[in-house]
Length: 190
Image (cartoon, rainbow, N blue to C red; front, side):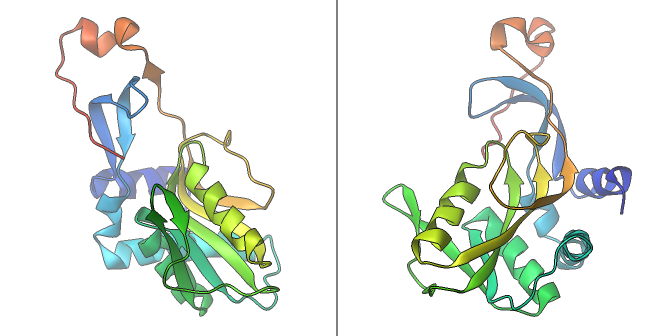
């Protein structure tokens, strides 16, 4: 699956939105990724995650893998599909008092995990998940994301694979061409 095919799937499922958006940062953009929309379609999500795993397998020897870990909420479905494809268990970290923690599952020293997420912008939630794995004495093997909207600028100390790297164009509100045309702006959330 090439970038054009991935983009087509994201657009057809409403995961890549075109319009006038106010981002969480306050900047404006003409494109927004809402990967939850593609994850509504299990067969499509499965196909995308299978492709993501294929990219990993072609470059990295997984050896004895103990599981896939994802940050909640968006990463849970990606982690599940990646784990299904790898035939390994999946777990997730979730927010508690504003930070990610392991509430339902236990990681053990020496275990090996792939970190899976739907979208990264700066990579903060993925880094929090990596920190949880390391704090448990476990090992991160790789990071898998459907969409890297940092266009490769978010970096981790582990091999990172994505289906698509793309940085949507952004503007300060004062220089936004869509604002200049009085186009309505929406705040789609994260």
